Amino acid sequence: MPAARRKGGELAEALPAAQLGTKHSITSPAVSVEPPVISSDGDTRSAEDATARLKTHGLVVSNRVSPEGEVTYYISGETHPARHLLREAGGRWDAIRRVWAFHQTDPSTALADHLGAAPAERGAETGSDSASSQIVGLANRPHYWGHRQRLRDRFLAGDDNALPDYELLELLLFFSIQRSDTKPLAKALLARFGSLAGVVNGSSEQVAEFEGVNHFTLTLFKLARIMAARLVRADLTEKPVLGNWDALIDYLRATMAHRMVEQFRLLFLDRRNVLIADEVQQEGTIDHTPLYTREVVKRALSLDATAIIMVHNHPSNHPAPSKPDIQMTKQVRDALDRVGIVLHDHLIISRRGHTSFRQMGIIGG
Image (cartoon, rainbow, N blue to C red):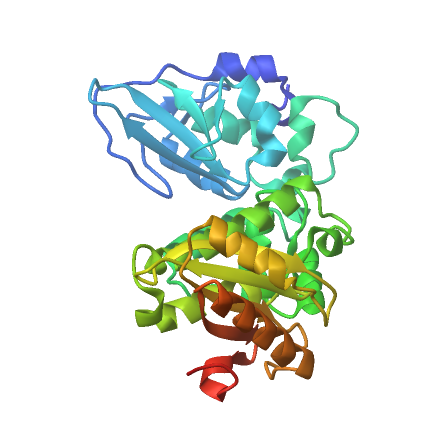
């Protein structure tokens, strides 16, 4: 029976026991394991030859020796088309390392014989429901097979600028969208929201409009947004805000500049001007957010705050204050003055920059 048509059970029986006379260190991407192993048809082939033949199918062989001398063999690379063969051969999928593991048994030669000398030799086979049918036509496999692993490898091997924004987003989408080309979705999201930050800060309703986006994608984007904000906010922890102004602006830009609707936040400070609380008071439309003076004063008193910084964003990207912005700011300032609370500043945040009411002379003293 030709090797290409053996059933998975015969493949498992053909695998020889590992010979452990010599210890081998971890080797990647390929290893030479001696002495030679015996293939299922009785021919003697070295593991090096089997490794080379497996490589034509996009499969990479490596091994690891434990302190006790036990060898574990790994098959990695484009394993998905041959997953049933690997499982029937005794392999176990290691989701953390993303490899197939074989304990004490080198599967290289029998797998290589089963797959054939080259993918092209099997490209014409069709109509089989057996495990071996999973590897039919590997020579003509789609361009995106193995793309995820290649992209992960480039990301891990490179510096912070190794990947452009669309590939970073594509890589992020791997974790929520399984076995699908995520590049078109990544590019479509960037085209809609303008930047990587815009995508992550987009509302769930807007992001969910795109085909392919699921609940896990929305969770992942929100997680990325919150983690980024908290990383930036760490520079403000237990430090006077007024003496760490650049860090404050960086934090506010990270959390507000790319939002698609207007949001009003209040930063409550204690007597040392250390941040007590950062709270979103209102969210409105693209150009308007109501703020109620009485609610601001009430919340400040409940937190025992001695000062406040008002902040809102302009989705229009123009940080200049409007007349209603100025009028409302003065109303809040006067109300806070009556209860002994200082309004340090009112900031407008946008992607183009920020505006300080104090620096403009609108409030001060």
